[in-house]
Length: 404
Image (cartoon, rainbow, N blue to C red; front, side, top):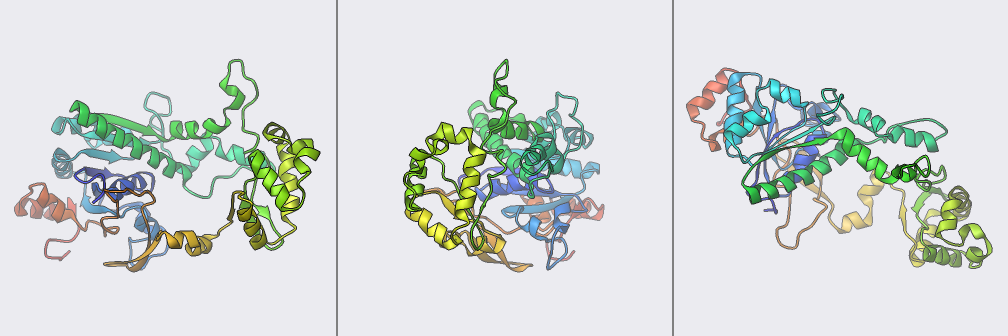
């Protein structure tokens, strides 16, 4: 049933950042009601699909939810949403705050019908700065937070983005923590509140936690940047037949590593390898020497040798490698499940585990508007009211008898 059993969340998010956060809350046991505009969540259309509107990004960011299609631009749709908010613990959105105000769904308007609600917004920028009303996407936030610049430091001057929606997902994770903290505070104080989770500030904190460096001090002690992470040689090591990932880091790691390859004298003989401080001062040379050493054996030989020496190492997986990883297979991380409309699909387990209130995905990703009637009935809407909303084009999804 999950540790969040009994928590109801009105989910007005779309694309990735918000849905990723609300999926986690749903996996943890919350009843997440996804509100979709008549045109549906854009991410439904991304990637290969067996049926229209059920692409893989949507399937992997929207399980453990129910879907209601409402036209919130219509007064009747807004009124219906506010009725749903009356019995909710949290409302989550990831559009600009001014868009919520335009819809008549500002914090003040929502709190007027439910003073205990946690009103959680994820958007680009903090609302007290000059960027407050700007649109934001993962690529833009990566750039503003210095991630392409970091790549340019180690990639012959060429900036690039992380080939994953890393800002969306990190901010989604932070939002989960902020929402849960707000629920705990609400249960203590009896009062709801607005909580904002801006992308830019979140990612600036994330990146500068590593790289503020000497700029932490006034006056600065250096120009910033964590030298080990910025070494051009910090990358998977090429072996005689592929690549592996290894981190020879502590003094004991280095002693065991050099002993395992038959060069136990190295830490004492070469001052660059003598201790942690010396290695950090010569990190490019240290990593370059490792690169030369790793070319001498195969990936399988290195992985076996490093495991025996208790030096941290992992294969460098591609997607298929992750699917076949023996650890992920043993822990049951990947599961084949039968989706009621999409057939057999691969699902990923909730990574965290609980000793008592185990969290499991409560349902698979919904078709658009699949639960419109069900959710409105639970909120006290009569059959006549539901039929009227459908007739006016405010409510979408299948009717109670399955007809569209």
